[in-house]
Image 1 (cartoon, rainbow, N blue to C red):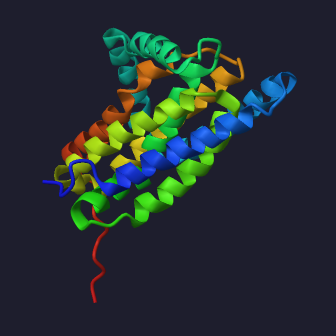
Image 2 (spheres, rainbow, N blue to C red; image 1 turned 90 degrees about the vertical axis):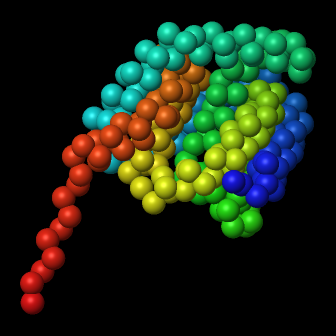
Image 3 (cartoon, helix red, strand yellow; image 1 turned 135 degrees about the vertical axis):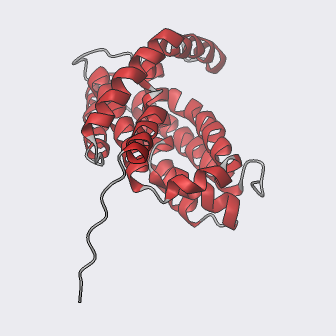
Length: 246
């Protein structure tokens, strides 16, 4: 069992995102409305670029394609996008952000960015099992800086993502012991990261008005991608290199 119910690292990371987003919201008020479209476009380009970088982590494209396809179907059947929209409407009213058109994109963009990747999983496991926050501390600094820029451009939705960080990383900390097995399998982490990268790319295109994609419906792919890779490795174990004789 995890030593902490949530973990110091999760609290530090949540605080970093909340503080960074608050600073960004204050800074965003100084941006003239005539420049808002340019700023959002820049964030859209940066988000798409981050998505491409994460996607290139994939070591098994076919498994990733299957995860995205089936994950999208599953998410649509469950109604994840509709649920996110309903939550966004509630949060808009609660946080007084009724006029923000990028509210949902802000939550999705920063939630995926802050919660998907090796540092999240490794940091939560280290926090829970070793009582160390080195990795989460590094991640918190990066997330805090990133949240400033995203909040300045996308608004209060980034502040809401601090709650997502708290819930997701809190669960990872509690489940640290069983998840420790996954840490040593780089392939599963790589595919989860790559699936998140495709979602980041889709969010970037949404912000750039290239194509509107229901990104939230693809969230199950984050779990399906490593699961599919694990099954492939179990059914078709990778060949071990021959040991040289002599």
